Amino acid sequence: MTSLKDALRGTGVAIITPFKKNGDVDYDALHKMIDFVIGGGIEYIVTLGTTGEAPTLSSPEKKDVIKYTCDVVKKRVPVVVGIGGNNTAELIHELETFPLDDAIAVLSTSPYYNKPSQEGLYEHYKALAINSPKPILLYNVPGRTSKNIEADTTIRLANDAENIGGIKEASGDFAQCMKILRDAPKDFLVVSGDDALAMPQIACGMNGVISVAANAYPKEFSDMVRSSLKSDFKKAKSLNDQLVGAYELMFVENNPAGVKAFLSEMGLIKNNLRLPVVPVQKKLQEKIKEFVKGK
Image 1 (cartoon, rainbow, N blue to C red):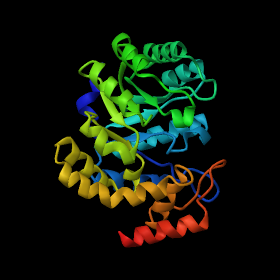
Image 2: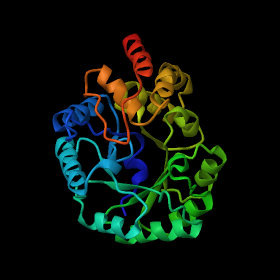
Image 3: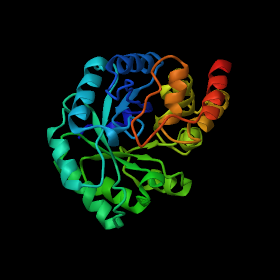
């Protein structure tokens, strides 16, 4: 298995999927976004995450977005593909049929709604790992899935499943994160899934972050992460302080409605989303507009 700890050290951006007014994927805007974040210095791109509105994309659209993203990136940075959900058999089919040749890894969110036991989570991920052509990154985000992947389950998978190479930890539980960092194998990648917590979590030993905010502020955010990884926390804090207001505004209502509001104010995309997600309310949009102008 490819070791991900060095390849995915730093900032990954959970890239948005731009849409046209009629709801179609806006590939010209996606091209612009890819060039913008790579030019800003991010270390890798994650496509088809929740920020990319993957739950509202059809299977053919997902395949097209993966292929287009990899073609535009042209190996300038690694690409991670999001393939997650609550139907294990369907996910195995996607792993076997999606165009993953140019991807370095698959990010797979834990099953939502069915709320499996820890044993169910373990068996789910083991089945994915056995059938995946690429290393799997676990994604623990109980705020969305209503089920936490406990540290013991993560460590068990890290030791038992050869094709599981890391975790995006978005539980916000520092004690749980530190237990994973203490007990997981040395080459197991642990990255933050919380923009606002990334700096202190890197101080605890995490290897970077998969970020929402880096869509809008790739240079500032990735510089902050690199400074943190070098233990230059004076510089990291100065950069992070400039972004705290953005973190707060981005997540007031919904992700990716918040970050898309920022990007539309920057002129990078049109502010279009797919139901059930809608643009942020006018009052919040005005606050975002003022923040962007102030930057």
